[in-house]
Length: 177
Image (cartoon, rainbow, N blue to C red; front, side):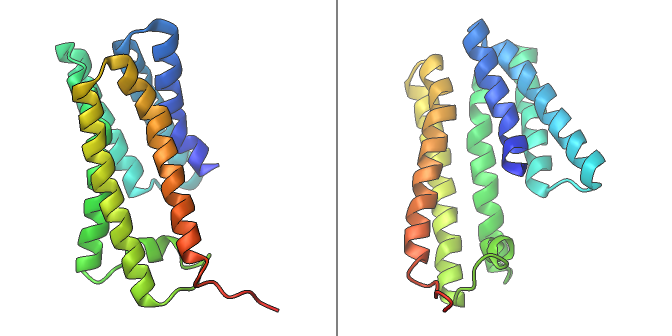
């Protein structure tokens, strides 16, 4: 359920763009949808994840700048800044002695600390790569290609990374008799 609520603003952005061919309308819809998802999380759980707050702040500031200045470059930077914020959060956490990936997944799988550390750094590198790739696509290709990449390319690469990570982790998971 959480992944759906996190993904809904992106899907609504994409749908609005493809029905209107207007990145500004799509941006406005994404701002409203993200705010609604954060409000829903607050009402339902009385708690909002840090990354949801970061995402809301980025969409309001960069989406707002896109609409105010009528410049699509602001919204095109949003995925990059979100990826880099997530990577920086994991890196800073690791340097402070807290492994963010372990904190999220320790209930699902038990791994040796060196594996958790490698996994955390793999996510840091992946987020750095995704942020740079988003900028490359945004600056080198058409708006339409960027919108497609934002949905399909970003999700496809994320899925491929998770599958590769799962294959790597399978070596460390012991089956119970």
